[in-house]
Length: 326
Ligand code: PBG
Image (cartoon, rainbow, N blue to C red; front, side, top):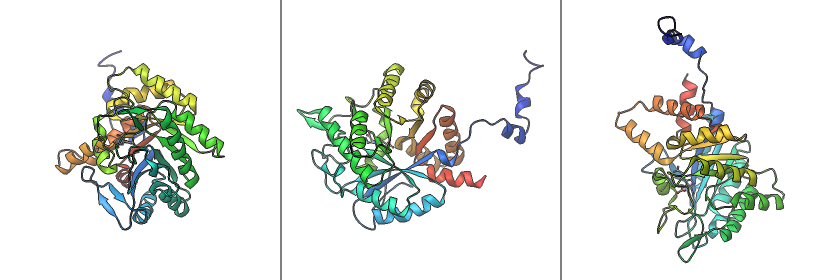
């Protein structure tokens, strides 16, 4: 039946009706806030391409966390920025490394926070790649051992969830085996399963100092032009290897992938609203070209509708404040 019997606008007649018919809602429970821990004391370095994002030394990070928790954020993902880098990323798996120390301090001060840690080598290697290098190639199998070692040190320091972002084949299995072998069978793995080689990571590499010194990440991260089937296969393999939660990253250029992964698998899906996506919104808002609050909330609603159970976003603190306004 069509017009004039059917009038879709009747459904939108009043705010109460629109509220009653709203189906998609972003909740504070869904949000994961990324934070960067840098070695040192009393440091609060602004990341220029990401207004509102800072590199914090552990002492300041702990103070800032009070504010994060007060705003109602219950979950963070932590990245470490070490003082020294080398070819094998040894500070990634040092027991007293920057991230391990910070994890320990956070868990002591905020035991209830859900603490997720990024497991990768690129912030810790002098060449900036996510794996070991041999003959100018990023090698897979020997990297796995180091990733498993890294994840285990995070779990030992108190991480609730480890999140491998390296895109090496077989890393979820290697990490699961390493954790289980040491009695950490309750530590979750949130795998960056569907991670594209994306230009949207640009500002993050400023924040984490992890720009590859040669080449790019094209041999391990996924090609943006690759098939949806490849995305499904990546997620399937990680789930089979023991991933508890899968991440799709970036978010907005890949909402079809979020939807497909969410429809295909039973495990929870997290989408990563990455640094470049954040930077674009911030820049346009600073110029007064968009209404930041409305744009961000509308975008998050889109991510929820596409099937994201969780959203990793640098906007989390702002969203928390906005959600409490209404
Ligand atoms: C580390 C890692 C990256 C991001 C998360 N973990 C960078 C990369 O792969 O180059 C990107 C996050 C963002 O852009 O916000 N491998």
